[in-house]
Image (cartoon, rainbow, N blue to C red; front, side, top):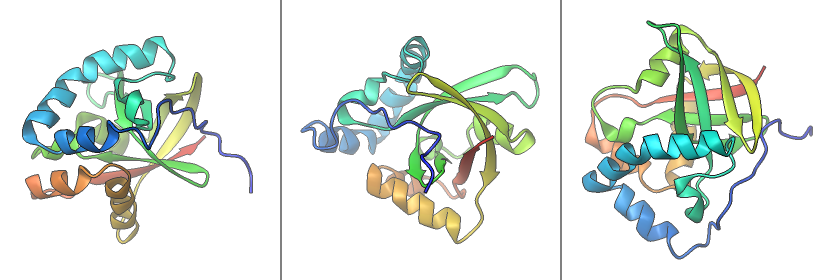
Length: 169
């Protein structure tokens, strides 16, 4: 099988003593608020390090910078997101911390599926595909296994979380 176009450059350790308490905190409403409000700082750190370092690095969270085209403005919009890797693709979830509305980046991908990710010092053009059932649920469950907050997010809202496959273009 060919090597993935997406480098695996997480720093920190999946066995870090911080991983489980951090995930439990992130699953709470105050924890979601803190992470949501740190997203701008994390975006800056990720941009300055070209996707090498993240606030969530100490717990080995796989984070990517996703740059979409604003559906209304046409301007580039960059969001730090957790991702899950499988084969030649990575996946992102529009959880928006369980809020009642989809994140703007997911609507941007629906309008324009060509985007860019920055990970491990590499800029990679990608094409996004919105997953349909049952694949959407299968990948969503993988996110919940990876970081046990997605099950909580899922129960905070009645909307179905959008899950996208990103394939190198």
